Amino acid sequence: MRRTHFIFGVLLFIVFAITGRYMRVDFPDKEIIPQDLRLLMRSRHIYILFSALIHLMIGVYMVLRPRLLQKAIQITGSAVLGISSVVLVWAWYAETYQTGQFSNVSREGIYLSLTAVVLHMIGGFELDRRDEELDN
Image (cartoon, rainbow, N blue to C red):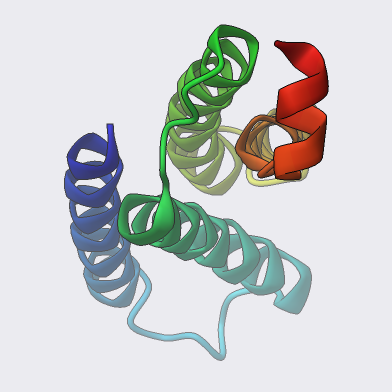
């Protein structure tokens, strides 16, 4: 699971670099672009970096917990985070190149990221040994 997050994070970072280069080539005259569209494009681009960094950090630090419920919550969080990453990349494309304006796509991607992080926090929380002894 850790390796999957790490690899996905590296791939997302590459997507971040490619989308940045693509915007630089596609919009060479930044002064001509309306500032609200430019801000939208840059923020959606940064959301991809945000998602890549979450994956990288989880890939470095994640430890699957032995308790079944905690492990299930962590795996669910990982799945939700993967979906959120795809949604955020789609939001960059859709809001920058299709609509040219804000839509709910990026908002949904951010909320999915928040949900994934909360699930990982809940699932990854290490119980006190006394709590584990009481469970047995």
